[in-house]
Image (cartoon, rainbow, N blue to C red; front, top):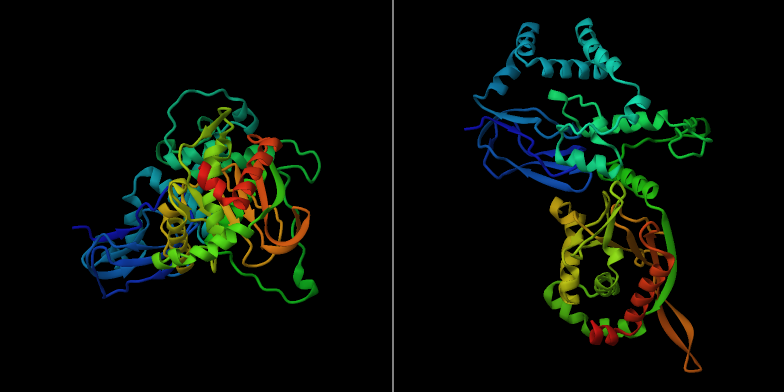
Length: 451
């Protein structure tokens, strides 16, 4: 039986993991499937169950630690890891170091030279990686290399990441065993390309950020570390804004009739545990619109000059949580009625706020709806959730006087803000999509009749 518990694979592209809470302690017992860690990734807060059972001898991580897949979390009584923890003196450490494979020893030495240069022993082994770095061709020469056709050892998540940022994986020097390429290798290579590219002016894309001033000169300041979710949101929004040529159009829809229907049938959703809000009803209309306008349910593969049209409609619903913005996904939203959608959206939003959402529930969206109506604001520019190509923002509904059949009457309107990727969607197409949604909102019976 296994005597150690190591962090399992949590999903693709999960490279930033922070320990929020350790749920076991030395001397305590642990059972299989018992939650032992609460973690925050760049996508969600999750609990990790144990795959081993026994008495905990040593815990190797603490709350606040940044950890990686495969890292030792705790060991059970009688395990080699627990006994090794008790060993003292440089002799034991040297014995363990000599037992490592050569590649592993070099990798560990390189890590020490960066993180903790506190002895001659920790500095000297770093010469081998430095020599390998010097042997690499210059960035300009590497960038000019034609594809070699060689099979590059890399995880699927690394391959996808390289494709998304337009990097040819064959040109990336791998730092892992057998020249295996990691995501850090891809990032390092992309950074080298960016730094080698001529920059026309300080405002050019890729220009280094100027250093921040010393804000403490003007008063007291406080620095707080970003949460993993906030940090990943910042990275993803930067990627989205830099990769997608945004166009935003604004309009408003008459929701007077739809709101009357919402109030009339809200009880049906309440009975099922949902809540029939205007946002839920708009989500249903958007899901139908995506079937009519498939370009809005697509993604761009710029490397192959292809547009990927998805044959499914998975709506992302932006949810504000104490840890930051999260986007859970309603699968096959176009096949579900409004009551079912209201129940699912309510459940997903609660999971996000309670930190119980799973990774599977926040992946795979094809279009996103974001709603500021509960807070304030009328129109805004929502950022497309890359690699999607469009996003619809809902503002706060308000009443206004409107001319109907020659008479001025009071109507309720909903502000709409549609951002889309101009590489795929032209302005006329964006207007047509917005117009279809407006008409469906204003005349819900037409949607029910025509589908």
